[in-house]
Image (cartoon, helix red, strand yellow):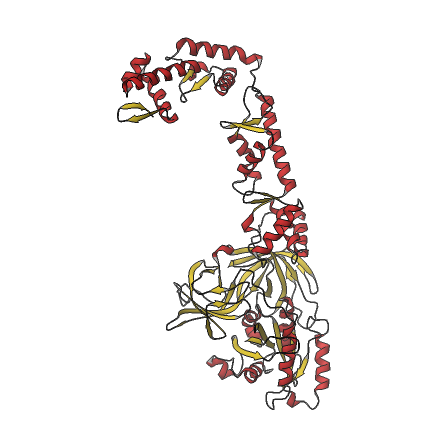
Length: 640
């Protein structure tokens, strides 16, 4: 029988009985720190484990990892670290206090992070004569929230009343939730790190997005520390594979715990795979502010200082609104977050903003782009694109098309790599888009068809312009064509795809130039005189020809010479030496005959054979070596 695993977060105001409830339900006291024992309050995250019986809505047993978070206002940072990866919440509200400031802030934080499933435990029910009034009042406080319809169960850890009903309510709620899928992109946000004898460095956290295996190579982001999984535990049991949606402990090789003055892993870091990309310090986001009145904080000002919380990490940041100068309660907008340090984020990640004084939660949001640019970030074009991206965040097909519209070209195996979509889902969607013609695939690239068609059209016009300007040439040089499109191509390697496309559709490459197959290189009338002059000079002087400088006396002679070389009437030996083609062939035949008869020859013998000078013979023989006609052996040349 398959077991269903879920992460349950404990929330609620301080002294509302969260830790006591966890201890009664699980037998584990989540307050592990001496200071927590002395002060009687949760300061840091606590963890416990609970198995629930099979409910009427599920045929599989439910296993819960419970994360107990601090309720005191001074420790909201730790609270946020604990609820970033929960599936549902068990919210404690004391019958003798009911709704308190931290109750409200916890509720808003849960809403910002997208937690929509929960159960309310009306704790300390033994202190109330009749809980019906408290339940009704609590229901009023929840009105309009994402948890307004959550079950409310009166409980008491003193007399045990309501605990069976609470377990049943939890089982019924969790049985309706889907199991977290494995998309092959594991991320374990570290909430604790320590060193243990026999295990070395151990980190714990909630594993999301994929599984981890013993022996697997991993990287700790954003510090880019390479490591390997030595051992794994889930629910305090050793395992070869840790599954997504479970609390897991991972012992890592070649890393240490960060300490005073010592760099290493710490809370906020993420254990993941190197193939999932790099951390970032600028993200484009969609921000929302609650319209609930109890915890209304100051406005979010454009370019204001905030703290950005995601997963178990938080960073100082500046929030740049894409429109307007402030964001008020009940409003939403696009923004760019510029982080003081790098974080490892995915498209679709939810986050919180807290004020600079760390006294209140300002807003929540969702990451739309992980590696954003400051350039033109407030342009209307950019705003329109991000509006579309936000609307498509849960539709892979639309999101992929928006990415293509934005980037024009992408490397196929890097598309939406930093997202919660699996490689298989992305590959299937790409296949569908290719079939419908919405996407073009060439080699390892995905291209926007309209953009690519326009780019090819520009290249064709450039080649046609060269044909018109220099009809004596085969076409435009590849280096000129390449430099014309360097700034227009977002990814290296696309020029070769352009070249392949042109050659497959009516163009032909000759040497280092490309032209239309229908184009025939012809010498204009004004260049014929220069061409005849060059040919006469090379024919008459044979193996003692004039230098290039003597032959090229003006622009027409340069163009004429390019034409003669292209047509094969003149052979370019090197930058300084040219030979008439027939002279070159005769010299080559003479050398071949001599070497066939004598086996080898020195440069002096070849010079005497041809009746030329070292100035001509040395570059001539070197060219024959390069062509593979002859081969050098010491001071001798032989036929290859």
